[in-house]
Length: 127
Image (cartoon, rainbow, N blue to C red; front, side, top):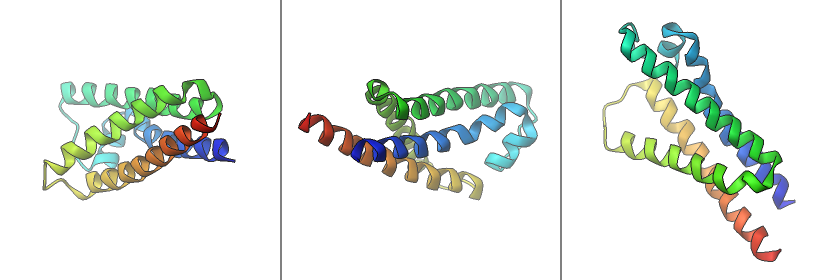
């Protein structure tokens, strides 16, 4: 049973990381995600590239739900991602409501990943 819960938690964190992938479609989609204008071509390129990277991490998290051997690296990558963003957001007060929703989503992802990590080590300790 814990292995199925670990998988479900990884899928949840994976879906949260896959959501920004829509930003690869362009400035309008990025604006909807983050509540900012992305008309400057260099910023648009960087943010679209960031969307692809989040998509890759999200795919790894979902795939690791099905491949337990990949779970440690997926957990590590997911935790680095959400913790770094949450620390940056905490140190940068005054972000907009759209980024506030990203903070909430990352808090959910953090809770899921921490619980999955605890369960992973619990199961591993019994094996």
